[in-house]
Length: 140
Figure 1: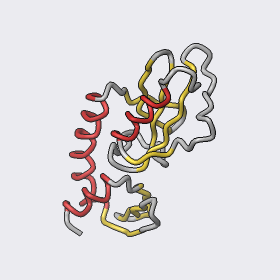
Figure 2: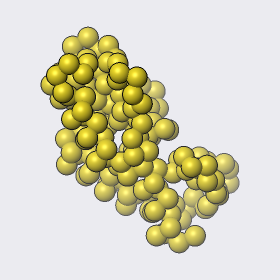
Figure 3: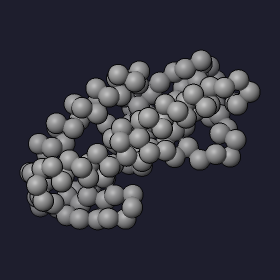
């Protein structure tokens, strides 16, 4: 597998799971699983990390620890704290892959109901749309 193929899988939100030796397993939400050499993956991950951080920052998000090994992109809009993570709650979620959006009251820290709607979206553009939808008065 070449670097371009690895990059595309990581953009889609593939989880990277160490399996031992020099191997890691790439797991996509669609169920695709494959093993690759960790050494070839590291260069691609470092390049994408910088790009992903820049995209989150351009959209007004800050990457923050949410406790333990868990991370999320965080943005506060109108006293609502939006936390966006991938399924692995990795340190730099792909802004292109599947994401979970959770909203909290900034003052109380209480989670806000999403009116029974799923907080799952695909990509940063859908996250931003979700924030606009949730910011409509009377929605929370």
